[in-house]
Image (cartoon, rainbow, N blue to C red; front, top):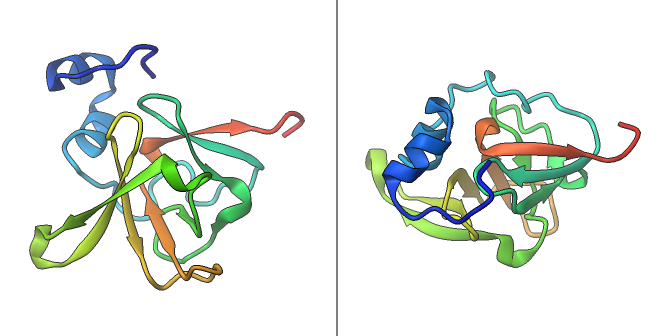
Length: 134
């Protein structure tokens, strides 16, 4: 994770592991059921793996059965940005880190929470900051 804001793809490529660069900067995705946080149950805050911004709380994580960590809401409304995504012949809503622009995944309107959202997020885009004692 970088401690300074990066602007160019060359800077990001030097800073990030190849798998994270492919997902976060090239809008890639992890294969389902392969990410480190798919089955994670510990409490804490999921931070952006690129810049450290707080993105999601473990209290909003749920098992969607999709193969990616899923959340009902971001940690704070302004922490993630939404963008129309028409790639792969589909219309979806991409979510990115509001701080550094890293691609996180997508949000779908079929979640169990009060807003009905399912934020389907790539594990490699996240770092879990565990609560003390976890």
